Image (cartoon, rainbow, N blue to C red; front, side, top):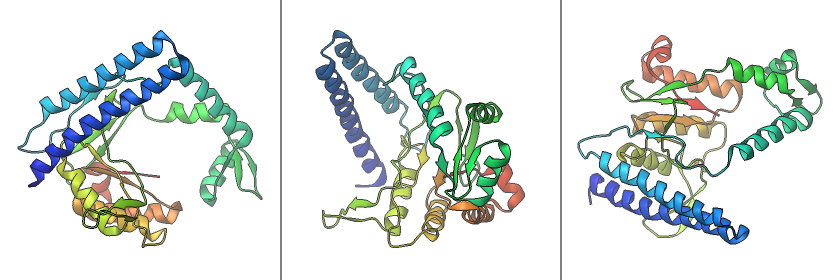
Length: 269
């Protein structure tokens, strides 16, 4: 089976799996609430998921990778009121519980910006006005670029993109059929798989190289992403030094730090 046949086989499997998961989720809601609205929700979920997957199938081109863009908002698990409740709860947690910040420079920035900080525990409590100000300053959308600069995704532009699931620590070995810890070789293979699949737009870090200790593991993973996919990527960065190392790697791929700012983008967490 060549890569094209494997990709088509996986696409059909994903279609059956997503249809099953959507139906299972809605049936659980219907059983719990026993309302007509839940049964209507089941019908809408199944209809829209199948419609989106048919759209992917129609857009599939065996001659090369095509960025398939799907309008967002077709599947809404939560109502607007429920989303707003989560937003209010998040603001409450940030302001009164706080977050532990281990990076000294980030901790100082929050303190200088007006956060209530516990110097001993390294906890920053972020008031609502500070959150809103940060959101106001953030761009509504931004562009991620792949390795060669030609492949790009605009995030936040009312489009929906698909990516690999992220940061697993176990894999099902294709040779032995047994579950085992993921390795750097698996990281490489998942990036190559994401690169070959036309319905995967963004190559996330699917699994962790568990044989390598942090923070070096994140750098090895990012290096494998540059080597094995031309799509957009993401990764982990542990503190300021890890972020600077990631930028240095990316600048080498881009042809220099100046070129990095023009044609290559990734995000790190």
